[in-house]
Structure formats: C-alpha cells, structure tokens
Image (tube, rainbow, N blue to C red; front, top):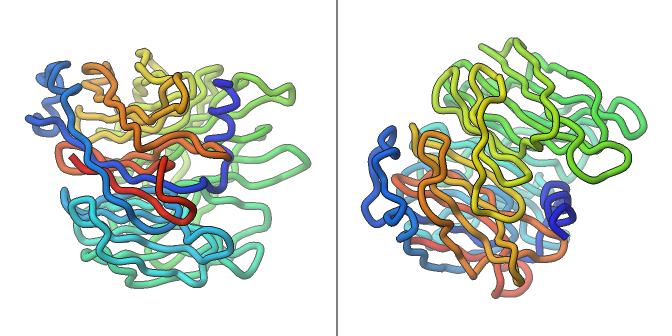
Length: 367
C-alpha cells in the first residue's frame, strides 16, 4: 500500500478534488532562525478551511496573504488560476489554451509563472504570467521537441526561470530535460542520462544557481532504483550526480550551495553543492514535498492510518522540529495525489486532495 501510494502520487495527472492548506506557527520565528522554534510551537499550528473551485495541482504565494493555486476545472475543462486572499477564493481565471497547469513559481510579490500542457498541439506547452494581484497577465504557447513533458518550474526573477521534466528517447526510456525560460523564449535545453519509469521531483533556483532532482523505478518496480541531481548556473549545465536509493521527490534551495530535498521514503536530505549528505526521518507515511525560506522548511505528506489525512512537518536546518500537524480535510483520493507545498509568510500554503466538496471543488485551509 505504501509504495502504491507513493508511485500513484507522483505519476497521477489529477485527483478527485484538491485542498489548499495554509499554516503558520502561533509564534513563528523569522526566516533563517527556525532553529530557535520549539517543537511544541511547531505542533501548535492551527488550520482553517475554505473551499475553492477546481482541481488544483500546485500553489505559489505572492505575499503572506495572496497566493495562486493552479490546475484545471475537472473533466475536459481548461486550465485555470485561482487567486486566494487569506485562504479565500477571490478570482478564478480560465486559461483556455491550457489543458492543465501543473506547476507555478512566484519569485516575488510582482508575479509568478505557471506551466502546463496546451489543449492543442502534441508538442505545445503554455507558460502563464501571473501579475501581482494574482491575475493572469499573459499566456504564451511554446513548441518543444516531441516527447517532452514539463513537470516543474523555478524562477529567480520574472525573467530568469528554469523548467524541468523528461524527454522520451526510446521505449520505456527517458532523458531528464532542463531548459531556461527568459519570460519570452524557452532556450538552452539539456537532455541528460537515460531513466526508466521516471519520477521528476522538482527544481529550485537560488539566484543564478538551480538544482533539479528526480528518481526512477527499474523495470521490476518497487523502490526507486536511483536518483539524479542536476545543477545549472546561469542556465549552463554543471554537475550531474546519480546517488542511489533515496527516492528524491522535491527540493528547495536556501543558498547557492545548500538545498534540502524530500524523499519518497519520507526523509529530508541535505544537499551540499549537489552532493547528497545527511538524512533525517520525517514523521510522515507516504509522499513528501518541501519548501524552505532561510533555515525554515515545511514538508507535506500523508499519515499511515485510513483515511490517510495529510500531515505537515516543520524542519529546522534539515532536522524535524516537532510533531506532524494533521489536517483531516485532506486525504488520498483515487488516483492518489499528495499535497504540494510552498512558503507563506512565516507559515506555508499547500494544495492536496479534499475530503469533502465533490468533484471540481477544492478547499483552502488557513491558520
């Protein structure tokens, strides 16, 4: 059951409905000083719930109050951007040229970029510029080589982003795909290695340095057979590493040399210049995503008891800080999908599958 949840969570294209979670400790420390936050404070986070529209896949925040959830309207509906303020939906913008928006990055209060597959054209993807009010400002369609699937985007600024995904190269074999997005053009694509049953984890940029992570499962299935860590600087591919067995499922960088990565077996790993270092167990059961601000990180996953509610864990300098915060408004639908998470002021915002609300209804949770 555990591996089935993990694999389904990563390869699922949609969930029955989604919840957006925002949370912060009652007395949070400033970024970079999380090591001073007590375990009891971390566990005392309070969650509140608000319903929003659609099936949302990812979340980014412009400010501590204003965030955008991206996904699609359900069924054959188009992609969409949902603007939320203090957890409450204030606007839904349909992106008719997109079939589904799968990732978003908000480098500052001035805007975000979201990515997703186009409704027309097998080789087309759309990049959606979101303005400071959470409004859709521009939609750009780009054509890329056949077989490419984009899964993640990270922006250091609105004119400096990197996208990460896979490019099919042969039957059951893929290459990792990295490209630079300038706000106008997608350029400098790199296709690296060969993997089976690829599981793109994500990408995170700190100024000009970006780190992408992913894992793959061998032909026999089961636990991840290996991982990949890719580093670019100024859009130029640098180091490539292939550690084995960790199952890297997400990454967030806090400097040009230090990043924290989440793993499928619910650990947090410290990356130093792209080298996999120490790992710490997280009190989660399946599926893990992570987002950091300074030394402050939050990880999201699922508990091990039916109906598998979502859990969130505060992390201080790569070490869990307190017990998991449980949100019983989120669970595992069919197909499975675990929460995606981002930082929101001193707390976090996350999207995941909602327990109630029915199809095409998501839920926002605030503290």
